[in-house]
Length: 244
Image (cartoon, rainbow, N blue to C red; front, side, top):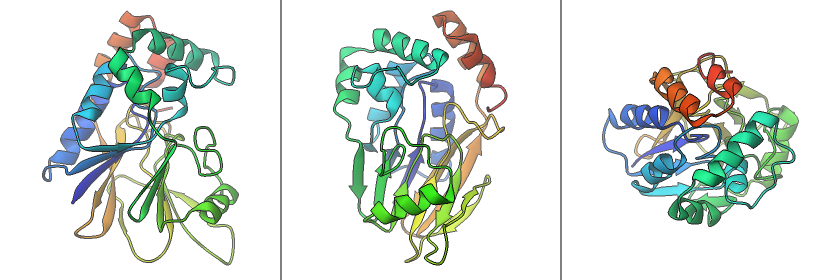
């Protein structure tokens, strides 16, 4: 099976299309696994939800998904994020809102656990440190966990002797899945934050028991123009060009 692992699409249709085209270049996809924040920040929430739903998908909720359908307040969002969440809430179709409302926070799928932030705080914790990774492993019941939220491609192998280091994952990095427990973050589709503006995703191949990290170019000006037309905050528009 070939499964695309995506996270933080953030209503960026051009980026999502490019990711799917890249993932399907090597063969058809059997499924999409989405780690949350399908909407928020970007200008095409309904289109991205519809595209996700056009595939066999396993999807968890992210904080922006929850905020957009009224299940989380935006008190802890920065000003631009809150403005975008409020705009998204008004734009969502009934079908998209119903879909996002029903998403679970955590899903176990075979040897994988899917969660947006962390198992300790599914909708909000940014898993960035060795100490946070250790806390994740202590709660992780499956061999692997897939997380998003940070918009940073990364991986971590369990190390019983010391806090496990969380390492950045480069474009093209190929990880062999063994009995060793791991945490994997595919990075952000719609709003990368590692200084590389290309959309990020990962591809799970069950036949070879590997996960490969990938980056693809997308039409950033197209998304920026749509954001500007929607009246979304200028900072959110500008940062796409820098991957920050």
